[in-house]
Length: 435
Figure 1 (cartoon, helix red, strand yellow):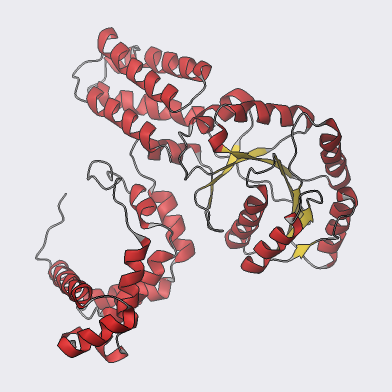
Figure 2: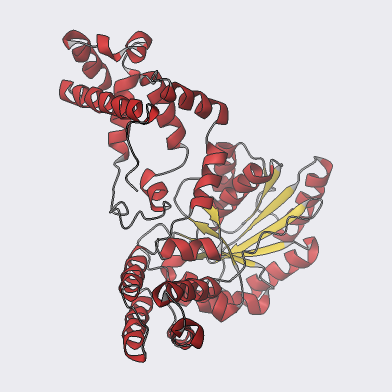
């Protein structure tokens, strides 16, 4: 997400850091480039004008002029203002309730049903509590079946009463949740246009009946600036507490994320980062600004690792690395742990300096990863523990069993051997880090 915008802004900031002094002339040139980058990312023109004017005024202030490193201070100004544009402080979900009730609304096709399943999964992982999904989309064919299928995939119960009145279904679901010890109730409503008075009235009735702590509007970020009109339209008739932006991992310029809070005063609370059911992140303006400007997002990376990686297994592997005993069994275990973090190229982008090292354009083919895993799985436990015994006949058998070639088996063994040598040098203190 925001790749093109990030590249443009990072180039501008790199250029300004080379100036010994910030002047009206060079700052005007920089602001022109920033303005174009934001407009091309589909950020609302009023937002762009206000943002660039604020940055320029602060950059020409006395504090910057007197600074020893005016370029660094300019970067901080841009980061601070970008954070403010994205919403300033992170706004967490209000999950205080017994049970806490979340109601999701939106247009048809915005990804609402998938998003509600993702949020239920997120809440269960984050708080180790019990969510209940409620099927109140009684108009779209197969909507209930879709939610039930997602519930089965996640092992989360779905409450449904077929095509009955959504207002009554939601009220009955709350009673069911209270009786059965559920901590969260997530109401999936039917997609509708904000100009459809009858259906908007139905949402209002559900809201009055169940008094949700959160009313979240799901918006497809591919809509661009039309999303602002939709948010405003819904918010005029229903007090929204937040927005869920879907498909930010797709071919989107991301400008809507930079315009939402400023133009609607509704906070972004979640962003969809992939089609997978764990492809959802809580939205943190400060972290997002850092990622756009190429400063990485180590905090999110650590959080992902904490959720996904088995701590005991990781410690055991690290110890074997230090002892020089790392084998293909450990390698396979590490691969499985890494896969839980999501696409590796997304993880790489969270590293500070990834852009400078040319890592942001790295594409890791999941099929190639699957081939590597298949090769290792085709080895016997003895071969995985002692790769040196893998000679010609064994390589032929492994290649045949994994559906790969002997050349691919050789390549993997060579790479693994090089990795082991490198680990040994690090553990012996004979190799210095390149920074």
